[in-house]
Length: 391
Image (cartoon, rainbow, N blue to C red):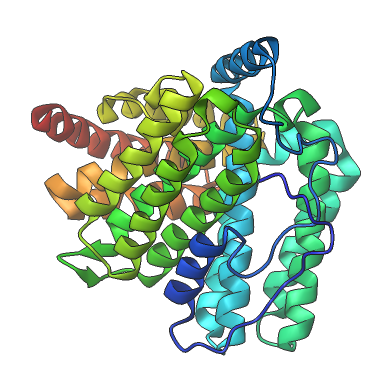
């Protein structure tokens, strides 16, 4: 994700089927599909000379291994990249006149992502937090009443604020660390995998927004990998073209709307190779637990915290906790649960993602929050039984 070129800007496309074509172009060229960031990290390693010393190699390996303990920063950076992906898709859809999808991709960062990173941004720079939050809202308001160029310009401004945010929150030693960046790649691919599983069923496109989400997050992961690969230690450099090949396979599979198992296999191959390069456990790289059902106790815990915050009239905190329960946990349950009981998955998703937040935001009596959370927990009990039984 560490950009070397400070002059990059938004580009446009006249293709009718914009997103799949843009996606493949991104993988082939190693550049971003719709727009690229201003240089994020001036201190980023510019690449290693072929004659690097053994000490340098050991230091790089140490740096990469130490990244395994920085999961909160990896999650933060992944969320920033997901916002970038949504903005790319918003611009792509605006360019072809699909304001409905453009609107969806401007709202997702606000409704599903921002609350989970807002506390960290505000702690680092309250003014920047306000500017970024306000700008995301302004972009959403521009979908129906702006020109394409005005919309792209605003998206590029937001991208600059995201650059500033990363620089404020993430220490420079992580910004410059191959292992950290490759963990972000794995995290993005894991989220993309879940989105794709929701979007495609029996080779048919079922959910267009989730399909575009998957494309966008894979696109961001590919860009980050290409930007990071020059700083991979020389003794592991042979793995770079292998990973690039798997990314190409992944791009083709998504474009062809292959079965989710094919996409999962390609993503698994990339994560495995990254694990070989970094020495970091595959589960840490992808940010997923080996037992999907293990997310459910954490969802219950966060719902209890949501209830406590609401009782104390800390409504913003309650809303943030509800988002965390959904975005950082339930999203990883959705795809495997859908294989067992899609209706249960979709009902619980709606209860967590929309209904609970609506109740919190309208300040209903605490009894209504408790009743709703009890219903969610009942669904989670069913989900847990199904997931455990399925292995």
